[in-house]
Image (cartoon, rainbow, N blue to C red):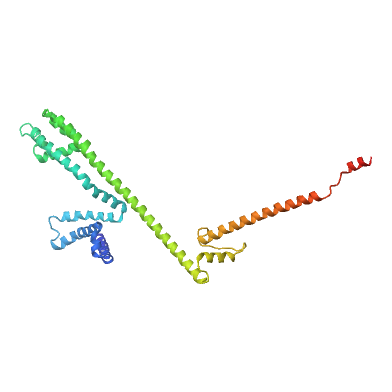
Length: 313
């Protein structure tokens, strides 16, 4: 029942995508091709049972392939898609390293077969043919159980076994495999940085779209105001006309308080008027103080009573 439910959902999704997107654009996306392959794999066991029967020899393989349906999750995760893209880009950079490693293994496989694979006293299990030599060198390259392999050669007292083992491990494991890992890490970092730049660019595009919507809304509001005030030839005249109708006790309610251009223009004009008023009041106070000082100088000064008594004596 779970298999039927899963296949039904995936098939419905496939038909919906084909209905929404044109068929040509749908097949250009690699993840859409992956979805189709996954659906075919999911339908494979039931199809084989209907056509051949349950006694099919490779029926267990068809059932095991259904585990690949988990790969459908890749299309829903942007991070996983980034990693997969990075792995795809590393193929061209890693191919020379892999080819060089294959040549190195091929050369040492021939040397190992000729030196250690003799049927008389050689290590026939590990070096008896090229296939066994390739598998042995793979174990040496991954440094997995290389001491046991070397011990088998030391028992047979091969003189060139240790130098060849050390040289191969240095070349294959410490140089080529590390180079292989380094290239993959470098490509993955580049893909992650590219993904971050694309997300930043998408955010900037969304912000610009929102700004365009706001500007369009402001233009529509200005056009509506201009239509209501047909006698005004420009927006500046409309603002000036509006300022003349304002008083200091009037209140204004703005949707975007402190950010709209008309409010900023009116606010700056109000500050200029306040500065002019304060300057005129200061000049008036200076004039009043000067007049009062002159009036005090013109008034007769009265002598103190002590001085009058002295004059009478």
